[in-house]
Figure 1: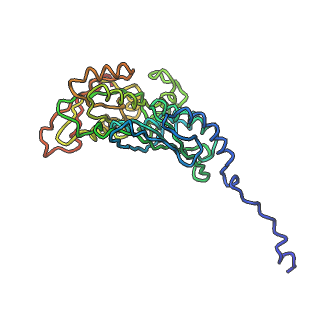
Figure 2 (figure 1 turned 180 degrees about the vertical axis):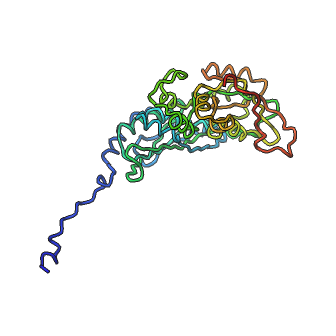
Figure 3 (figure 1 turned 90 degrees about the vertical axis):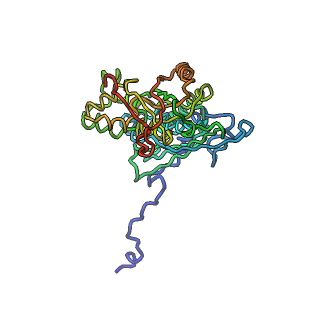
Length: 370
């Protein structure tokens, strides 16, 4: 055996490994930060200290505003609605959905959303796409009146395809201890007021996509007469954000509690804020679900019960108010351009011993033209 072979000189030199070769581009990440900076700066509040790029977001809680402040926190994501955005390569609205899912959970207890931090996981950092995502998050924060305090963008090559991403966020709000809303405030005779949704919002998309795209074979780019626009435009309609409307309503009327209608539908989410011994009796005949719900039910032969426990069916938020403040509550919401109507009332359960959580919400009648 020759000395050259023994020395290994005949073996080709292996390439030097780099982070970029492994699929992570620090330069692209830096570019993405610069592109998202103006959007993050747009969603701010006077209490925010510092700027984007620090190790932690700083928010000065001005305690002179509250006597006994209670912090509220919520974390959520958007779910498989993101698959529609990725299929259409349209990314500037799903951030609104993300904010809505977080801040409208906060406001249920009466908390004012203060700030939000996002987390974006991507297969490959594409700066313009990241900027579009943050643009939507910024718009959602503006609508909710909260600050975008920062976040994290993580590149995951090998775990996610280059065009894939997922987004989530955590929000923090504050409410005065003696102004907290909840099930303990609800009384017999209270009235349930519905606030209309803007569409599917951000729940039930796995079923919606299965029915409309897989079973019905409808193209996302195709015009749908019932919608007056394409299927993709309907499915990407941003979630309505109710935070400011709910806070305004609580300031003007006797609100007992709110219920954010998300996964599980109207009955399951409203049941979470109805105390034992009481029942919310609701009238399906008081509203007609939007055409998108009817189309899903028809094309997928989805039973009514399955529809109601999967989708919001046209109601995105519910308020329980005192009977004497019903007209005032409806006037406040109408002035704020929120579709609202009397949905039902709170009554005593006939037999508390036999009643379970499922009995806390009773839906009667049928939807007109559905």
